[in-house]
Length: 149
Image 1 (cartoon, helix red, strand yellow):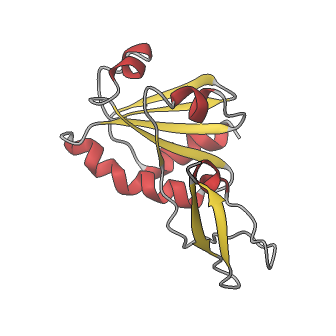
Image 2 (cartoon, rainbow, N blue to C red):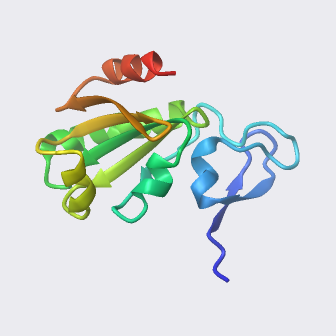
């Protein structure tokens, strides 16, 4: 059986914790000190989703998920990437931040009529709540996320 987990060092006490990959965005508690493993400066990355994993990662998630539909050749998408990374860290444990490469995942992109990128879609409990098309500010994204929390 393949172990799909990672070892993460607690930022509070230094203990090593084995965390399933699909739970790393949820800001788990340390097994030793029982504090959140990640703190504000942790480098939590967005979850990469594909046509095959979209339902599990996004639609079956009961909470809020922000999906960034992007492509590597898109300059505005590359400009948004650091903002998306920051949001993943800042919202760890509260909002799942995901990225989907539309060139590699055309089925989901077509399902949501993604014709311009970057496109950001907010889902909650598998429901499509809000769409933002084009490069935008971190503040604007945060305002839309907050409106649905």
